[in-house]
Image (cartoon, rainbow, N blue to C red; front, side, top):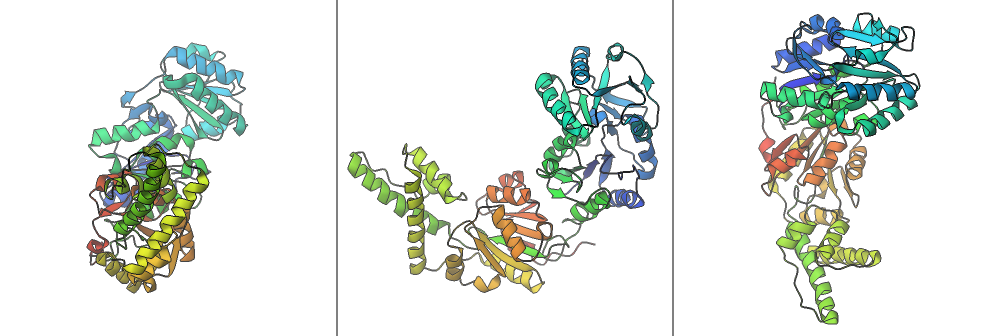
Length: 504
């Protein structure tokens, strides 16, 4: 994945808790620019509230203020586009937030309106945005062309409840999302940070996968989910971190600079070892079936023996025609790359058969026995390119593990003659727990580990577990699907990565 643009949130991301823009953050933006990567900001702040950031960061690209409600040039006065709330929707939101016990701020044009200048967080907001609010008794008089409403309370649980209720009440007419634990922002439905990413992609002619986004709050979730690389701050909640591709350090620990150097500039192709990996990689995990070994035909034959035996017995007892298991079609549709119990259920459903769960488990156990019998009769073939890559990784000092959801990983490795190539072998567990257990067994963290997987579900699980780098191994001609599920790179065989020159 080659990143061409980074879009960053401001509060909780670019600045510290005390709203300080650190020298390391400014230097990180300069390193992006020197590497040919564009950079811009999006924030719930008004345009004037980002004035203190423009010069130190040397910003030249348009900025998205009010969560995308207004797009401005770096002079902060030239408006390129804006999205406002319909007056009726603004009135509905204001009335609900006031009744819920929240203070309400109204941003309209270049002005900030409120009722109580001494209320909670007003002084802090005044310091953040760099200008004074206009105090008025009745907010209903300034609800034409509202760009953003903010509900404010020191009761964070109340703010969260209000966010959820506003989302239900306003539906598709407006967007409601918390920008801090104390604020819920209400904006035009297309004034959200996900649309900021899409608008940037359109204006710059970039595919979404070449855009990275970094943030810390719930209102950053749309952009973290849509961007090709979403990075959550270490100070973000688990809700925000969960869908992100990477999690960096907190904003008090130079998390932005760490993210730039580690996840953007420290990723291939900008930086890589001779193995084609990020320099921080300490461990490699390899999927057993489809990456290391050519076991699909063995699994397919074991499933065919099992299913044909059961279907033949059922046909005799029910006097229905026997329709055999199709070695190619049925295996690829119901079993290939899927957990075995899920595959059995899908196959039985397709045949209109309902069995007790105990019987389904018994069938799965019998399939395992049939596989072991096949393994006694013939040797498992390996993918020699992968074996050479594992050997090169070990020679370079990386620790290695073989992983498989199958209960017969040990037998498969033994049959293939390669058990000594791995420091750990984990099986009989579903991802991502399988992958995380393997990383722990190697004495590393997920952010220091690379995984090679050949199935879309395996790739998605590795991405969800925040692995440093996810490499899709495409044996069957579906590279786009592997990328769509989160692969940073897709190769036909890991051997193609060997001997790559280290980037400077």
